[in-house]
Image (cartoon, rainbow, N blue to C red; front, side):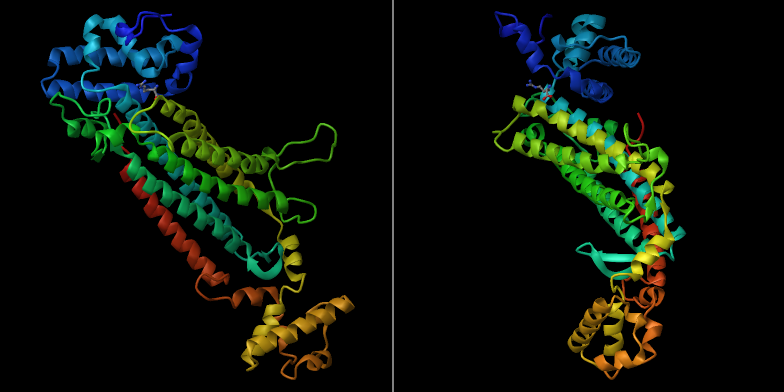
Amino acid sequence: MSEKMWQGRFEQPTDSLVEEYTASIHCDRRLYRYDIQGSIAHCRMLAECGILTHEEASQIVQSLGEILREIERGELLLDASQEDIHMAVEQRLMQKIGELGGKLHTARSRNDQIALDTRLFMRDVVLECRRLLLETVNILSGLAEKNLHIVMPGYTHLQHAQPVLLAHHLMAYAEMFLRDEERLAQCFDRINVLPLGSAALAGTTFPINMEMTAKALGFPRITRNSMDAVSDRDYLIEFCAASAILMMHISRLAEELVLWSTVEFGFVDISDAFCTGSSIMPQKKNPDVPELMRGKSARVYGNLMALLALVKNLPLTYNRDLQEDKEPAFDTADTVRQTLAVLNKMLPELRFNQDRMETAAAQGYALATEVADYLVRKGVPFRKAHYVVGQMVHHCEKLGKDLSDCSVEELKKFHKALDADLFAVLSLHSAVERRTSHGGTSPQRVREAIDAVRAETHARLERVHVDAPPAV
Ligand code: ARG
């Protein structure tokens, strides 16, 4: 048990169980780099503003640099007696330079300090997630390009609906991930705001210059209200919300890969490197990676709920409850980064089975809409055509045959406009090729969509580059 920085007004030492209970260092220790980076910027600003002498500041800054290296080399023991990373660094500073170290905390508080640290942390996390997501989009575009002509069943209600291009299906996910990246980019702008200098809650009596600190740490904006600055956790909640939606998308893709890799579907082969075997059934190759992606989405949703519940009843401003924000936020950051990294390795290894997909696409009367559209082109109102083709399907189903197995005489019984030229439209490829409307599945439209998505991804990567703070 060590002497606390705030010991002054206390008669008794902290109970050891309480020390464990209130400590956050096991978790916030990973913020050490950001904490020290913030302290250095703060210290330099204090000197520029005449609050510390330049001599004092340079001693403090130099020692902070040493502490950073000590932590990096694992030389500094971080334990519960130090409560949190801020105290641990400050305590070490005092050990190194004595009383002078105590001047660093002038005009700030741990309340604005932790807000700063988590914003700096989140900035890096979000930038990395955006890069990873744009890579996912590029991989999907590449897969779509490579498999541009494979036709597969398009589903609604998981029933065969109309044939589509596999590339179109894949690019649907590219669109989702581009929206996710957009959400994260917007979230980034709200993370990227400096709170340091708000002090405990009310601002400070010292003539500080927050613009200077902001500039040093690469923040384009500064919080406007000190009370909001120390109690706001929107930036974590937004990240967790954007992550929950992103994981929902990954989970849907994962679900399709699980389904498509069954014997029943046989649409895709997931590389051995991303599957595991069974301890009892020798034949098994289980799609564990997509299953875990689906599973991990649940934790990410849970983390979002935990944060919303954490903040909802808190009076302004800082309350110690807020210390509980880090585990859900860090867990989300780790899960999302890891999931995206694994996804980006797994996707390029997928092998699609064209035969299985195209055989399946032809089944289940998936070309019925083609017959209806054919009749409409011959002047039959769509509703009437729909009814006629419904009867044809019913008839064929009873006889266990396909629409294209009908003779012209048989067709005529359903509608006089049906003729031998119908058979030309009863092909998967023509069904797909004729869907040329905007956003449709024709190869030409999908090709254009891939090009557009590639250009968009390129522009977004540029934006990530611009958003990245300068290295310090
Ligand atoms: N460890 C604290 C947290 O994570 C830092 C802020 C502590 N502030 C305080 N007044 N106890 O929230």
